[in-house]
Image (cartoon, rainbow, N blue to C red; front, side, top):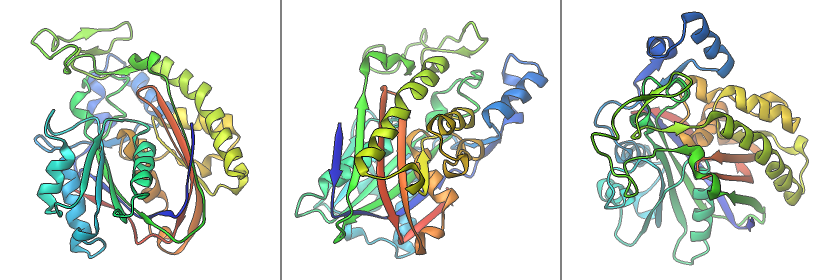
Amino acid sequence: MNLTFKHKKITGILTVLPKNEVKFEDEMSNYHFSESKALKLKVTMGYNKHHIVEDGVTVSDLCTFGLEYLFNQQLLAKDDIDALVLVTQSPDYFMPPTSSVIQGRAGLKQDIICMDINQGCSGYIIGLIQSFLLLDQPAINKVALLNADILSRKVSKKDHNSNPLIGDAASITIVEKSDSDETIHCNIKMDGTRYDALIIPAGGFRQPSTPETAIMEEDIDGNLRSKDNLVMKGDAVFNFMQTEVPPMVEEILQTAGVTKDEIDYYMFHQPNRFMLNKLADRLEVPREKMPSNVVGDFGNASGVSIPTAITYNLGDKLLTNRYKTCLAGFGVGLTWGSMVVELDRLKFSSIIYF
């Protein structure tokens, strides 16, 4: 599905990362590997360290902390926020919506729309699409898009497929109406027949958590996990990415009427460095235009890896410069989406630590 938007712009991006940093070597003994094999895995996949929340920290903690930072720095005014969109797969509660919790904790006005969106790897793209749709309403001039996940809580520490790469993070992206005629091009695709390629089997209403679902079992690759833990079918996800993502990117560039060379940066979701480098090569895009350093330095925090890639690699440059970017997310769902959008002299672009 192709979508277009006009008179919308991104005016600020903030990433919130936990201070707690865990190095790959600190957890290496958890895996059924020799030290030499573990270190080879580290080099191949780009594992180095990941940032993990402390016990008791939730999505609303990270998001509220980020909002209060923006208020205190006078980069955002509370009463200017007309809608709050939270994209997460790790809510504080089943109910109420975590966006409502954040609205209350941040002291935002009551004349506001708050909504939660349950999405993962493509969540940032879907959150931007929803934010743009909200801005079509006359009463809405500014949307705070929050993307946050703390999936480290749902990963087995003895799962070498997932544990070394999963990180926790939150981002706040401010989206506003604009006088610019610049068109934002988006596309989004979904295939629920492959929903089990990335899944936490237990914990929902289909299979509630019980003492039995917490029992650790070993798979054929030597990973130990329970039904309460994240399961990632690595081969299926890699094949999906190599098969579905390149045509999607080719399509969005063609629709937007731009060549690959005209894109300054490809800021994509980062499952791991190996997969992202393979994707850059498949698209014949220079690797330096598609940064792959977030997952190795901070961890893969699902859709938050996209705004983290932007703030980490561009940072203050975005305060004075303009870049034509292609954004893309792909994974859990299975869902994949992309966007061609100008990032032009933002009010803020930075990383803070909780």
